[in-house]
Image 1: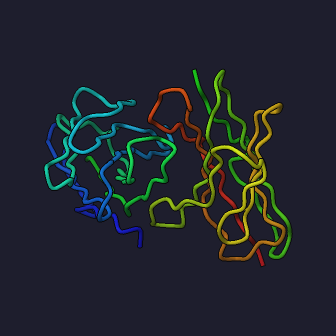
Image 2: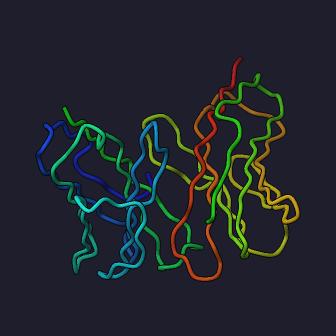
Length: 114
Length: 114
């Protein structure tokens, strides 16, 4: 158990819908990262927040957005969902904002878009 | 652009045999490197990381990796594998100059047979 929690574990929805994925980092960690894992794209970095502020952006679509709240939990919002958005979404956390810091991954949220 | 290549998508080995999982990176600047393991239906877990110093890095579960700057490689090795090592292994690299994010390789599935 990494100490990072993600809810829900599974999510099934239809195309065009909007969903919110939630992540609670390890106690004391200030950085939260979001990743998308799919068979064709592999593990892709989406976005990073540090202490409430956006730090780095990766291959995140404009239909996706994220935020980190004062209690440091984070939410990833996915809208206008397409079939290709079906994937495993991971959240990770670390103490510092730097990429050299070890990231601790949550168990993931499996999103299925029908 | 920075990239990480894991040439082998799957590596089958017999139990107690040695194994090497290959990782090559491309970057014009100094990098730091990680190996993560993903067991079935779980998130990623750090095996080891190289930031600087000794090029031979020892990690958990008997794994080690060697940073080779001239060959831009960071291969993962274990002298004797167990059935429980069956998992997906990811190599990741980050740039020491300014980037916060990690670039992950496509993963190598290690399949240990009895």
